[in-house]
Image 1 (cartoon, rainbow, N blue to C red):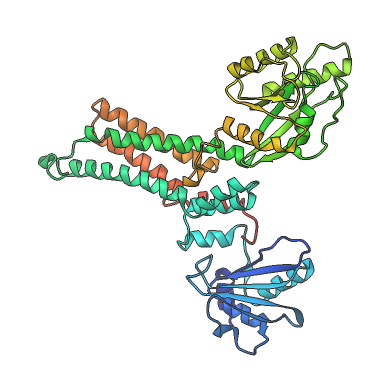
Image 2 (image 1 turned 90 degrees about the horizontal axis):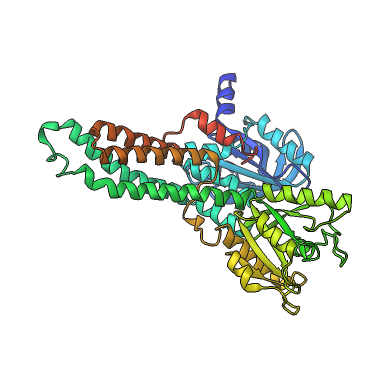
Length: 465
């Protein structure tokens, strides 16, 4: 092999460890590119004595992995282009899961002619080889980082092309109107004949429907962010209402100290919990009450600050006690916030005014925080308050800031086009805004994504994916 041929092979074929860089039961080294099978043949000797080059796609062989000496026993999986993850020839070598041996196998692949893959390069190659759209490629990270079953299902739908299909559907409608305008501008002497009697004003309804679909997608961004990153949530209420018991119920652990002594929680205790959809960054705050204790006063001040910062409030009221001035003070403090009213201690005789609480709060749930069975009702109430129960993210959603900006640009351009039609603007001006909307949608899907945008997307991937 000449130096020039070797350089070309190095540029074409990449390799990386695709399992975590830690000790485990197995490790997998992926090789992808024009010379992947040739490289695998140099370092893998099948136990059946047959050559690797003769292996068909979607077949496996057991054998030994060698460089200058034997490194390990393992399994080789072969995928033939274009029926592979990357769309190229792919060889996946599985060995024992020691960090050292996995790195030695990777080094053997590099010695045989591969180069080390860059972050996300396998998925990037899948994109460039037409195996997936840019939004599908981005969803791979969401699948990897999914914190709960609901977000995983939504991310898998995204990976299957839900958002891509949605944006294509919107773009096709806009393209139809844009094409008619182009025909009218190209053949002005024929009026509407060339455009099939096209009337631009009759397309306002169609364009407005596209704008509404984009608005819905933009709203999905916030719900997706809550499911992925979490929402700051403050657990508040008067002393002994059961805030710490609620915290322990949600974390499934004795995270907060629970006693019958008022004022036990003097600081803000924080924890992150998964609520089967929403991820909550919980803060168990000190109980609201008048106190002469200097330390407890600091805790109450922190509680008031957390109320200001929180996007969700879990307001806990004690069913076994009547509403008191501390309860009413709390109700005033949380006015205007997204609140789930948690009526606790329903196992005890009711002495509070449940009808007043129901009237004041749209989202109310009755529980016994000491009973684990109450968690399901609380989860439903929280997801309902955050809009997660009503959202169908499996139909496609805006998963990151890049996508949000593209969708927003498309919506703003459509708004300008519709306003132009309504105000009698020249056709070329309307066509200009429709082209801008199409450009934004194509940037979203990746049809017109620049190399810089693609590089920016994949720099957040791990090496080996």
